[in-house]
Image 1 (spheres, rainbow, N blue to C red):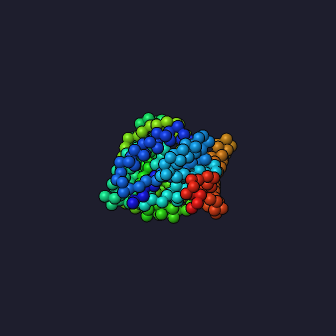
Image 2 (image 1 turned 180 degrees about the vertical axis):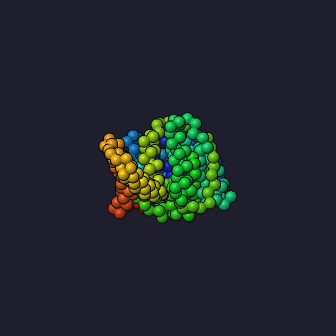
Image 3 (image 1 turned 120 degrees about the vertical axis):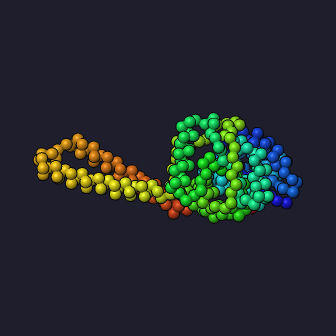
Length: 315
């Protein structure tokens, strides 16, 4: 029997989990009997009753397994843990908020088993229903990432995808602590089919991604898959040095020709402050990369499991 594992990262999703579970079970029932499913829920340190809801699923459905973290480690850690504990020959990754249409699982499966793709992934072609500022920043981020990194990051790409075991193992081989899954998915390569769909609103609950959190996440992606900020800081420093030399020569020449023209302390103070700000910006960029290196060198675990289903505890 072909085993398909559906990995579901969860953080405070008690309101939407029953509807999600019902929807994904309905889709699983539409597959052939020779295709078995397992549902692996990863509770990312939820503060509500998410774990209790998952445990109720596990009590009445042997296909349900779960991991529960000791605290909130973030979605990236939940994705990594889910892929690491998935046992299926095919592994699907999807959110619990029903913004990832469950019926696409069948299309993803057909793309891999019948069309020869290694991975089938979903991407949104519209962002209707989202705040405009959020949509604008998201599009700018994808455009910048495509230009400055060597990872194939598609605009509107979701984490929602189905992968062969070979793709999963390749992703797991990237063991870095600072994880940016969208970049990793593109970096490992493989033949991927993109399935497009219109934006879908959450079925229940509230989004966990504020504009500030998305901004921080985008910075994680940029520093994880590009050194362009460091190069930009270097070029900026060279350019400012050139401007400074030209300005000095100009002041000297003007002083020699006209005399008494080397005054203007307010303007000088503004220039010094400006240059100082550029220097601090460059040091800050360097510090971001150094901080990433510092975290990697410490080799802390990506996540810590507090509780798991019986099969996980035994194995």
